[in-house]
Amino acid sequence: MLEKLVLYMQYPFVRYALIVGILIALCSSLLGVTLVLKRFSFIGDGLSHVAFGAIAIAAVVNLTNEMLLVLPITVVSAILLLRTGQNTKIKGDAAIAMISVGALAFGYLIMNIFSTSSNLSGDVCTTLFGSTSILTLNEKEVWLCAVLSILVVIFFILFYNKIFAVTFDENFATATGTKANVYNLLIAIIIAVIIVLAMNLVGSLLISALVIFPALSAMRLFKSFKSVTICSAVLSVICAFLGIVISILAGTPVGSTIVAVDVAAFAVCYIAGRISGGIGK
Image (cartoon, rainbow, N blue to C red; front, side, top):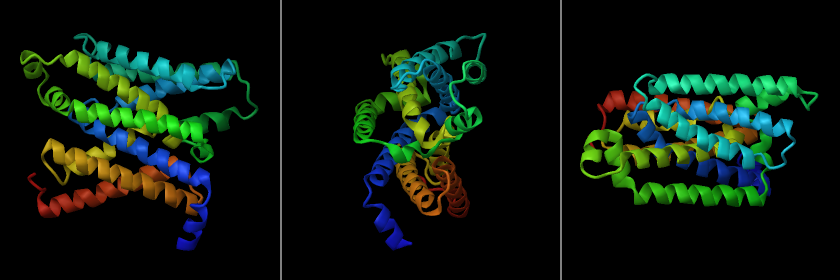
């Protein structure tokens, strides 16, 4: 098996898949802790369904570069989702459910009405659960993912203290002069970018797993925000790497395999946390 892996690593498409997968997993885990603590975990799920609708539109109009349409629509939806979630009449979870279900239904409807493919069910399944497109990335797409991932990491490092304040006590952060609404908006936009990047990796229905599982796993072991964030990033990168490698060697779907490894890691962390009682720092 090791010889087989070494052989596969000689191919550029395998190296590209590993690089992109690890970068997406890293970015997802960094902001995943904040989303989980703010009880906004399913924002990834909601935005992924919006991205599905945007992809359906791009397919209908035969747009060569889907990201030109998908990214702006997803970012705008993230902003609307944040604003709607702050409405006292429509809570955050209701806003996410409303937007995600509507976008999913709309996307599938237009794909049926204006179908340009002879294998509609296959296209839908591929978009929802991921595909082998992660193994057909070109160098330009890898560089784009790398640049966007670096920007996300830089944003998180530079504004770590602000993100920490907004995560735990938004009212206090506002009272001390922190523009909480601005940082919430930036977080929502960055999550939208990550969602669009992750579509090819795990599909729209499984994206939330990249955000939720590493954060929850780390919380079983550590208590402080900094420790949880670091542990979440490490776990996410390891799970993405193992998931892609197992998928290549065993011929299983990439997205589902990564999520399965994330679930297994959560089970291990849960058991370890129960035995040790959690680490204080």
